[in-house]
Image (cartoon, rainbow, N blue to C red):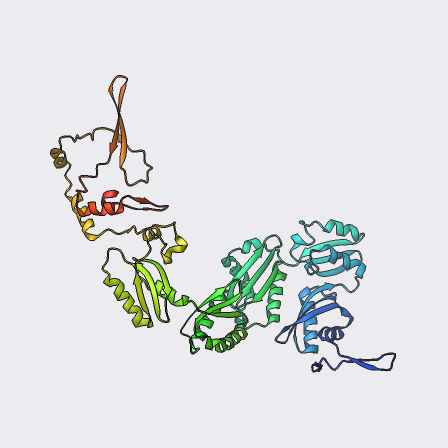
Amino acid sequence: MDRPPPRDFGQRFTAFVNDQGQIFVYEPDIADAISLACGPEMENLSGHELGNGCWHGRCWLRSDENDYQEAVAFFEELAEQETGLQVFLEAVQIHPQLLSRQFLPVLKAAEKPSDVVQMLLLEPQRLQLRIRHQPLCLGRKRNRLPKLRQALSPLQVEALPLGDCTGVEELASMESLRSFLAPFFRPEDNLDVQAVHFHRIDVRHQSLRVLVDAPQLSPVALLRLARKIRNSSDLALVLQHRIASRRACGLVHEALGKLEGIESYSVRWDDKLGGVAVVADAQQSRRQALDRFVKRQQEALGIVVAYRFDTQRSLMVERIASSFPERGILTGIRHAAEQLYTVEAMIPQEDPQVLEDWSDQLEQDWGIQVLIEEPFLRAPDLRYMDRLGSDHETIALRFNRPLAFPTRVLEQARKLVEDFDLDAISGRDPHRRDIRQLMVISIDPARTRDLDDALSIQEVEPGTFQVGVHIADVSPFVPQGSPLDDEALKRGFTTYLLEGEIPVLPELLAN
């Protein structure tokens, strides 16, 4: 097996001879090179490469520097000079005079070792700690500080928060989060708070995960920005670069438009996939071209891009459904042959020529032929399936209960209301009596608009009461055999819905 070419870490190599006299040369890795450069001041170093010339490590630093951030920055600069890489250190600063038997109990008492960032020996018997998100490590919630003081007796332990202890629950909304991050996102880094497009908070652990669309920042630059925010707020912050879903879909859509041999396509963001999902209406012979396209997009965007062929012609079905007139009923679309689709549809109370014009337009625009069949009216309308049973449009379409009234019916209702004469009606019918002097009461709710029954009560003689039941008389307004009567016969009844209703008579009369 061929060995990879050695890295240049200052040409530091260690040679040793075994019992058989064989000479071995040990090439240090990045962690070894950094440890050799920093000397005994750095302990327990481990880490991994992030790619793009970046390296992430964890360690303990021996330093009496009061400013924790300056101490870490000094060792990062030293490591970068030695390796030629961008180095990010997640470090605990430990005073040089502290022994392991003194600082190890402190790290064990913390929720996570990274919660403790600095341990300074201010006086021989006085230990000062700087800690992150105090409620979860050495603070009041876990209440480990009293036990720690007892274990380190006679040392006096003083625990101070690193930042201002910002509560993560204050950052639940995107607006509050962007306001919080604005002071840290510098224009000179070409970074704006609008690049933040997703965040998730964990109140129990006081943690915050933020996705930011920042391709111009290296992984180490993003880690250092997150550390700066953590050090000022004590939040357990994770700041990750991921292109915003809307921008990713737009870029993939734009690139697909330049790819030959793709008749139609759709692009959407898939949360389960964690990337962009493409549906392409293309021949199987385009598979290799699409494979190359996906590989290029994944490299360019840094996210997953996947595709599938539209074998069921669902893209064209969606386009047909979206172009169908809203006032019609559309219960089914099937792909019958290469360029032939069967559509179950109708438009109530309109000229059939409307549907013929619509199908001719489809053939002109997209080169497809549409065969129109009568719909199965008890099937739901394709465009309203997600709202089935919750709105009057869906109910009306599914059960062929038209919302609109024909023009001649509306004209008759308007004329009857305008010509209504109570005295003339009473004069023509001797059985009618004018009882408007009575107090007549409806028991319907206050918002009811169709009052069709009511009650009255009056004392006809001492101790005797007469209760009247009053029913709305529709017949003077709906003459038998008229357009109003024929339309009401078709509808049969008023359909009451969760919100609103589909009336049996025009609103001018019904309400």
